[in-house]
Amino acid sequence: MILSNILINWYNQNKRDLPWREINDPYIIWVSEIILQQTRVNQGINYYYRFIEQYPDIKSLANAPIDDVLKLWQGLGYYSRARNMHHTAKTIIHEYNGKFPNHYSEIIKLKGIGEYTAAAIASFCFNESVPVIDGNVYRFLSRFFGIKELTATASGKQIFKNLAEEIIDPTMPGIHNQAIMEFGALICTPQNPNCMQCPLNKQCIALNNDLVDELPLKKKKIKITKRYFHYIHIIYKENVFIEQRIKNDIWQLLYQMPLIETKNKISTEEVIKHPLWTKLFENTNAKIIHISNNIKHQLSHQQINAHFYKVQIDKINPFLKSDFIMVTNSEISKYGIPRLIDKYLNNPFH
DNA sequence: CAACCGTGGGA
DNA sequence: TTCCCAAGGTT
Image 1: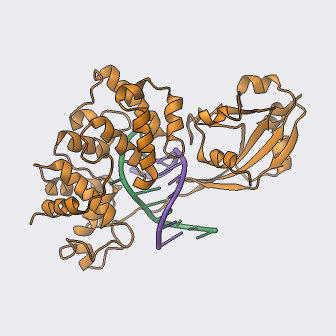
Image 2 (image 1 turned 90 degrees about the vertical axis):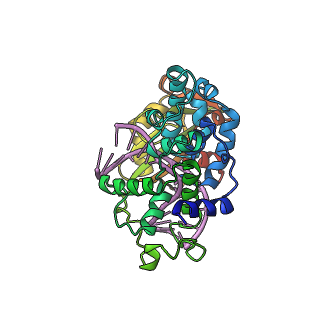
Image 3 (image 1 turned 135 degrees about the vertical axis):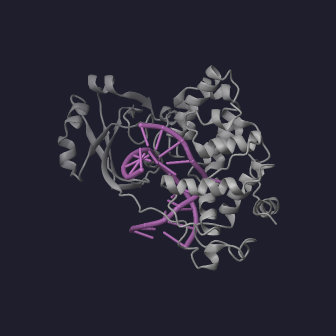
């Protein structure tokens, strides 16, 4: 039997029952694909339900304030996905007459949609014969065909793309693409792949040459930089003070409490001598109520070491008033905040 | 094109 | 604890 038929047969018998299956509305597929980028199904599925409920179509998303979209995305990570979706929803309304483009060559022009997502939408929704090549496909192809090439380099990518184009079934590209990805997710997994149950184990080059654990070839891990955050949790009656992160940095457009960041670890005394601390608390009769332990927050490429300084004040000064947003303790739940701060606010023990 | 951009779960 | 990494895209 042809490779694609084996994968599709396996898929028809073993696929997970997921809410975006059997749907060919490009908006729905788009939302699900963006949510699932670098994200496991279990982690993203509730975000998917909430997103579709709050924004059931392109127009509702395009008309929403970006702050609301980011609030919905809070905790899911990679927030550029939400910013780009919002941007692209507006693009589709204004430049595509509200209609999702229906060819790969047009879909890929949209912000936040790269080769993988464009191929997924084009093949799932419009049955265009373009191969999806995601982490699952790289893994399966490299093992099954014994490809010892890096997936990150241009030459390596081309090799995998050629293979993916060779094995796709042009009469049913959508099913083929979903089948090969599901196969990688359930059988040809990164660790401890289920080779015993694999319908292709006789022909798998990696398995027959004891290379399953070596493939796919992966590049060296990136260096993790350490950052030291000192958040100032200012209590004024029933209010706290927040600001939006506008710099080109992590958590862009999310909200946070006033922050003193240092390159190296510093003591409480040094924090209190910091110019920002002085400006924040001038003429406020400030009292430090509590200083949290160090809270480590691991990102993909950074390690945040955070302390939270809870400070009560009796008066507001002009700097606080002009540079920060005063919100009540209940209003803060309307703002999208990083997981780190969310955990702090919801954990009385820190 | 290498670096950047989150989070949580499992080994 | 530490490491890996999951349906990637942008710059």
